Image (cartoon, rainbow, N blue to C red; front, side, top):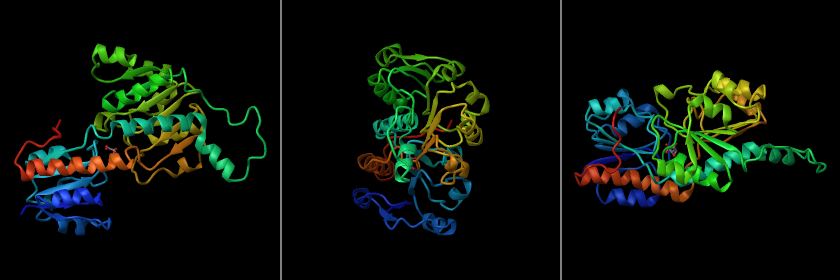
Length: 321
Ligand code: 8YV
């Protein structure tokens, strides 16, 4: 039987499904292996179900000479050197589609939290500082009627725009290619250039993949273009924002607040973020609802089965670009 390694804990139904087709090496204790332990495990694997936190590079691939497929349990795949995989004939798959609505919900949550100072209010209350209610207490920004600027307008970006419509928000978007007129009409979304989006938006939201050309897409210059009463939300990837520049903007209050689910070098993050009241911080949990994480794990497993057990085309093939 072909051997498949699952690098991190998944739901039981995913292991049960894989066991019907493969010899499975699971990690249901969710041990964090050191590099050598992991490399020993994958040495004769033909398929690996990776987590978004596994780094798949040449060194990793050298350790798995039998490997035919990497099924990443995430829609993003910047943890994987897809070119290196393709040079070795290793197929890469991801989990698009199943997490769009869940991540869109979370984006709205971060937007409201940052704009209405929900985290700050809770810290204040828990610290016993709340002595009275008064008119000018913890004044935030309105979401209703505000302008939302989406950088990236794929499935998740469009799911966010659908929600924004319900808040009466005006939606601007910036992408390389324009979406169809019918989608624009339906979502009441207008394509604009990046500069215009940054200058006009009350909330700037990042929902695009990380790649060399999106590294520090939002840096000092871009932050300076944003309104002083604006909010930045990053639910995409660390590295798209220059975190040092963002910290400076938050400290100097050249923008109002930020809501962040991702960081440069995560799970480490710049400790200066922790000192700031005007940033909402979460540990990369945009897709972390139970049904969605179940669906993501099963999608990755189905890709392994389709390709490795059934000899079919993988369902969610990632193409090297
Ligand atoms: C997490 C995500 O990466 O799917 C993605 O690309 O960013 C998130 O869903 C995923 O849960 C694994 O870490």
